[in-house]
Image: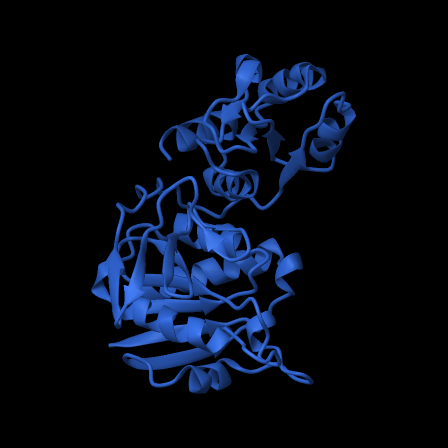
Length: 301
């Protein structure tokens, strides 16, 4: 039995003049709960993490558990886009039964009180615990565990308005709420050319057509609290839907309602925040299928 540690550097590994390796971080974290295999991955800063890097990490997580038979996987990741990469890993994990834990640090190793080593130590304990097998990806900072679907960066991570998944207490995982349902399995290669646009009153429809003219195979729109988008976009949304380019609308308040634009063919993001709705649409289009595939996928999330 062993764990895989995938280290991507970023804030938790930053020293004054160097970046700590995964092995360095493991030594600083203290004795792990079981044998750990370390893999260092070159990655962009988390505020600029590419889709190709996110997909590579998600694939490695799945392979480590489904094929390489690791008990669990811990991925260290910069916090800026950690929730998106963790959710993508969750979407692609399928029925793989092993602990999948993403962690990071809010303060670098060069800080007077770095939090990365302690977060890593807790994440390793969580990944080794049988309680997380089959749960999907989780985010761990401090002693808190947040389901990847619900985790949001807010001066640390929170699951609000959903309950926190659990905690690590005295070396054991204690789940305090029911994990979200496992997402549908699509297969195929996720469609990486999916655009995300934040809407605003009087937004010109040319901004929407511009991204599809440039090749976007799907679009996520961030609407208001009730999921409404400007009326100026209605005709374009209908046209794109008729061209079999799905348009998913995510409410900035995480509601499932999307207002009148649903009559134009738009699809509800099922309560996902916009950036996660983009990850879900990428996966939904993994085998093509256009609007029908997206509608089916989000209807089953």
